[in-house]
Length: 61
Ligand SMILES: [Zn+2]
Image 1 (cartoon, rainbow, N blue to C red):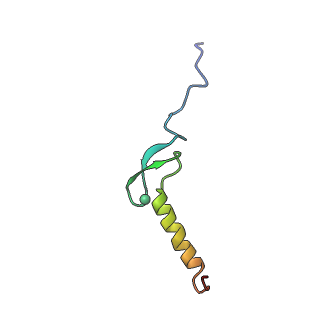
Image 2: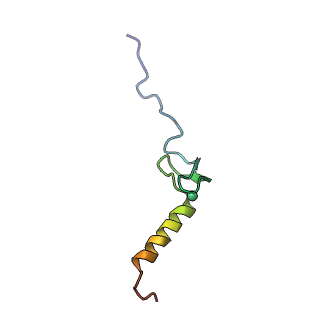
Image 3: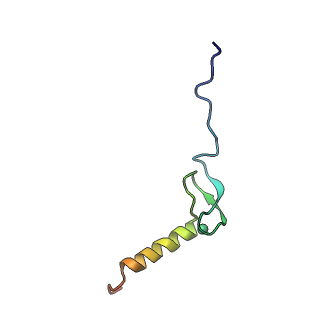
């Protein structure tokens, strides 16, 4: 039986910083790993929207 290299590397693109297309705005951005598919700008937009909703009706100081 031939010996296969069990520890052969998978796609070396995964889990490494790379330019990927944002699922939201479709712009390319530097994502820090393969699971990061939303650019920082869209993420922060989303968070600010959520924060606005969360604090809706609450007095902001
Ligand atoms: Zn985006």
